[in-house]
Length: 227
Image (cartoon, rainbow, N blue to C red):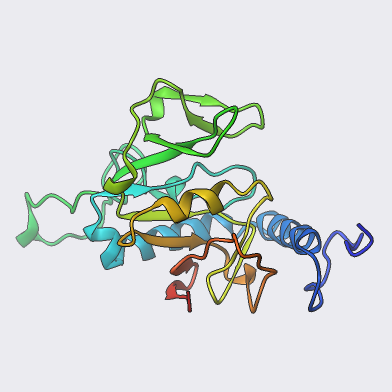
């Protein structure tokens, strides 16, 4: 892979660079962001933007990912089962005003997540924090006996990726799991790439099978792509 630079913090790959070169760049850039420790602030910003976003507020079922490594983790900032935006184990603690006493916060969507089987594509299961196991590659996922979720019940999908471009193309890890899953979802499903602002680029290499996302959410807010 002679087109992959050795610099641990390489510059943006040149036009025509391979997916391997882009993955090398994106991994290094994301590690640098995590090392600089903006990650927690970014995660809280992403969670706040989602909570205020109408498609998320109106969703009944949201497919989320369980973050691994240096991925942004909106669930760490309150988008988790049993949470309404505050710290774990409590409510938001903000000034809700005397007139709103006794008013419950709007419920989060029911959260579901994926399981990576030994063979075949991703499967969607209920997200039950007490019923997770660790995949051999290190990330958490539902156990095989977790309830299966029908794809036609999903309203919103949070999609992980190394980087995204402004047209909604995603650079993943090269296994194609989401590229096979996303086209199976009904047309009404809102797909949202979760990404640092610094990892939104003009264009990443695309192939015909690459699935696009309709929106991106980052520290600066939710934006539509041209997908």
